[in-house]
Image (cartoon, rainbow, N blue to C red; front, side):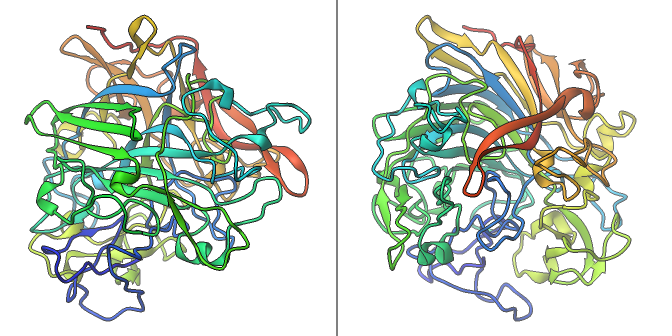
Length: 546
């Protein structure tokens, strides 16, 4: 999905997750589809190589191709009203290793090699998203009356009658995935608000019309980069239909530095879900509202229509609380309020553009996931992507890239300070309940490994393993105290100052296989094994309430 920006735009930028491409950037011709932006920009989650989207069940596009992603997640639970529709986090953006990566793998490991993005999540109303039992159904925001997870088709809360859900991700992108003299240097993070839906009737498995499937896929995504004034660069809706206010103003993008401390607020507003990022280190801030004023909209679920259409839409929180039953019924994960990393989107490649022709370190031979490959030599920018090395970005389906080795902070304490990046660190979120600000009272660790492992039978659980086959390491969450504040961190078991590593490995942390009910056309509701999950009946890292 390579897009050319309008010629009137100020410069252009390369973001691997969008892969916007300026004229003259690619050194050699390639069979690509070029379309203008804004207007008919394709934002297609079906291309799992490039898009960062929640995993559906099964993790395939409408053509049956694999589009899964590896998302080790931390879920936050509370039965108090308000906990499912608001979260206030403090996040420290991780710094990169002081030693740059090398093509032979002997240098440092930067954040972009471990995670294409990390994000904060929440379930949202979308009555044009699965299960689509009634396209005219009304989704009343912020209520647990929306909990429909009963497998009994005769029950009032039958999962197939759910009013429809999208999943919000506030995604943060590390330096190295981006290159532009206009937008940023290699030293900055930026963020985007996304809302992803599923255009399927879960009971009949009828998909949306063919025009929608071709243009935005089975899993359409609203996408808006967070800006200082809340005006997106282009309309957020999946078709890029021009309504609301937008302006392609790269200077207005909220840029953040490694090491900056952020206060992040996710809450409902009259105009749609509001995300606000306050950089407490620099004093800068930005926001975005998931509503029509920013061009957010639903892809209309109309399987018989001749053409794809968008309706302006305000996305609001789905549930009042956050717990084991406040899930997105079409998604692989069981989450509502959550934090997750998106790992396994980088492997070394020694030669080749788009398709690798010479395997890099870690790959004894070329394999199916050695595609989507880039090097600074392929671009004409003063600021190259990938910090000077060549790599491939397709999800690492054989689990042999840097994210699945001892390259994380806390995996080798003797070299952490010199070759490893800092861990992602963040507080447990708080929310405002009936008694004012409160903590979530319990947490869950969840890894969607069964949903992405080729060896796993998700019907029986046979072959579903942790860590994944081919991996020498899988990251875990631990806690640390900094300045009197408890923080979560992601990496190895021995990050300096760790208080609790919850067993010290992924087997103990993520627990047992989890089976959830999903609707199918042929067999009604059947159980799928899509995750490992371990629930703690307490919150081991509460945030101080001031």
